[in-house]
Length: 112
Ligand code: HEC
Image 1: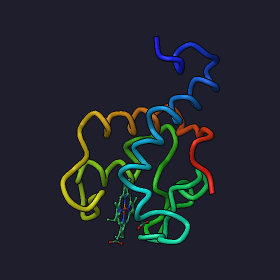
Image 2: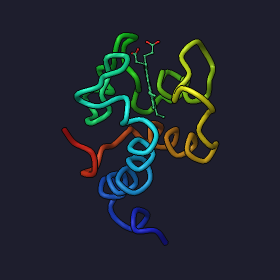
Image 3: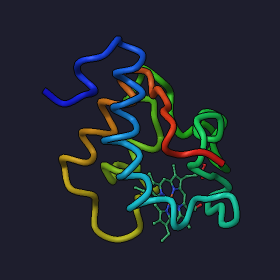
């Protein structure tokens, strides 16, 4: 069993972020959404920035994937499509969706 399934719910969610979510953000998004280069006026280095959002408003609504702009962008549903170019593999979109559904708990791996 992966370590994130074994611990208390809160520790489990933080581990899920560090082991599954953060690597996707690092590999796929941080190059354009960091403290120096805030494309769309949004950095992905802390939870507050995602809650507050960029030019278009909040990027995620914890517990509510359907209202989360970031996920709509990954699914190429509207005008905003992220990352630019081909969509992420379905598996990665599913991990990010699960993360938002579970409350978008942050871990320790990403910080300003
Ligand atoms: C190659 C650079 C690049 C990468 C990589 C990238 N983005 Fe973006 N992102 C942009 C640009 C440029 C904008 C502004 C687009 C606009 O305003 O039309 C943007 C805007 C956004 C916005 C909207 C911000 C707002 O409020 O207007 C979200 C959400 C977003 N990106 C999510 C992501 C996610 C999630 C990833 C990784 C899966 C990602 N982006 C990867 C360049 C990038």
